[in-house]
Length: 70
Image (cartoon, rainbow, N blue to C red; front, side, top):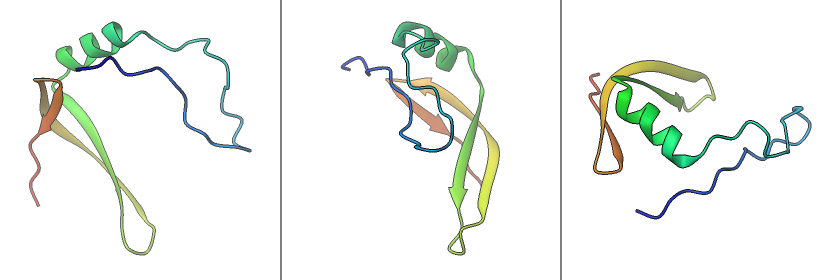
């Protein structure tokens, strides 16, 4: 896998930091993914209402694989 480039979301007017200060290297981010067993999935309904839920998962082969149930 090619190492991702650290960046911030483009959110004009929200006061989002624009410098590279505080960005972590990919190796550290990957270690956090490997150590985690809980991840958060965010979706939006058709009417725009946000929904956020924790799910169990595993970081394997450079992919987060999660267990979702309805």
